[in-house]
Length: 280
Image (cartoon, helix red, strand yellow):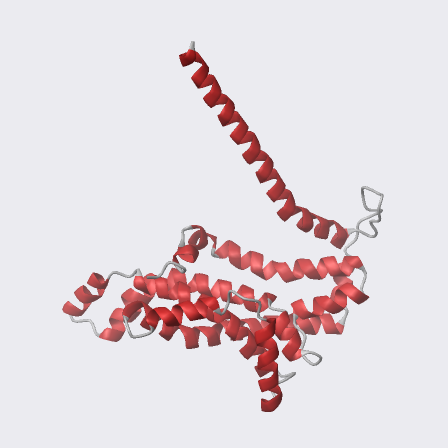
């Protein structure tokens, strides 16, 4: 009789676990998709007020109105200009450090990586305020250069850790075999090391772009009132514009990040992002 009860208990536990997992998955889906759905409805609704369960009508005029506001258009242009510059500068500065961290066991290497990671584990507003005092001395407040520098500081962790793990994953035996075949150091690096590490570098560039595109605290502190990006412009939109304009601008703000995540999805899901934080 006991033998018949045990499978029943296992089945009951299995069903209970599945139900709990299903409820949790549904809750997380609602938590993530719910706000996006709310934004999407408001972006196309003429008016949607509580307690009505549906909008009074549908329109595309809110998108037109967003592009008719010069300050919002300028904010979009500024974000699309600054973010690629930040990514390129971060790559030029950090990729050599990433390669050195992966290939050379120099003194202080682990301390350098740990300190760099720890500096991004705390709220940055205190760091930004301290940097602002230096910016006043250097006359960088309210300048494009100042905003770019403050955003580059936040991309360092992505552009160093992830490529370092990608460089470390390249088998040294392949490089040695190419050198034995007569290839020079630069050719070996270009055709083998860089080529094999490129997926990790691309993931780092995507994460850096998303960070730069969405960065608001440092950009607002350093750039305002002369330079506004899309995230910093959201502060004014929420306070002064109709909720439909806020919804449209929020959707426009998420489009580049969603597109880039979609393009890099294979490498992110494949473990390139996780491997970037496992370098030994």
